[in-house]
Image (cartoon, rainbow, N blue to C red):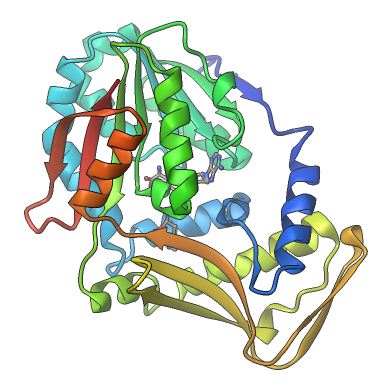
Length: 326
Ligand code: SAH
Ligand code: AVI
């Protein structure tokens, strides 16, 4: 129950599997020649909080740009979706859903059920509580799950508007992007709609500034990964031994984030029975953030069997939202 006495249903599909998933992923990542850890592990309570701060930074243009597009697009999107489930994949702080709910109008709220899906239990619970306080008539069913593994757990008994915003799709590699779009397409009925946010290719300076902010919040967000590994796997990473690195890889059209060892460093990961040596300057690759061109999006969605119904851009063409159907 929240403080207004309204019930929020939360279903947790991660409780049993999270520990073994991070152990397997970390073992694979730390025994590879380029060490890596999947970016989904950024989002513990602290990581989610730091991401929320990133969204308000002057250099981080994606959030405000996407929101400016949504302010124009949401009324039309909601008019063509009069009732059903609004499923949001990677819902985070639930900032953007408010634009859809406000566009629908108070009197229509009881026609919808909001289904936020996120790996971050704390973010999902806090954001759902907050939303319920603002929109008391809205039904909310929160799903704590990994959308790369648990798409079949997401309710599909009503018409659905599926939101995948913020260019979170860009945090997948190319194969995963295609496979993920295919898996959503396979799950969609004829009337379902899928709205995906894509961050577009733009000048390097703008991209690199967005991931190297002057206040160092992105650096804290990146280093928080080491806290997560220390806590979840009994590791002994020293945060002060690592520095944040983010750069645009022009050939691969993606911003890469890494953590670079300042000196040769030996780390023990007790739960994996693993000792990891990082040479001075060696990096752990923590995130890719792909940037898209129109042609790449068109090719990818067609390969997934999806059809573009609407395409929305901001005036500079920095970000786009694509409404897809099957
Ligand atoms: N959609 C919001 C938040 C983007 S941040 C926005 O546009 O601002 C990415 C969100 O996706 C985080 O809340 C993170 O916890 C969640 N996330 C990342 N990988 C995930 C996964 N594999 N399964 C479910 N949620 C995931
Ligand atoms: C969630 N995701 C789309 C963000 C991005 O821009 O790739 C995560 C992020 N990483 C650093 N800053 C923001």
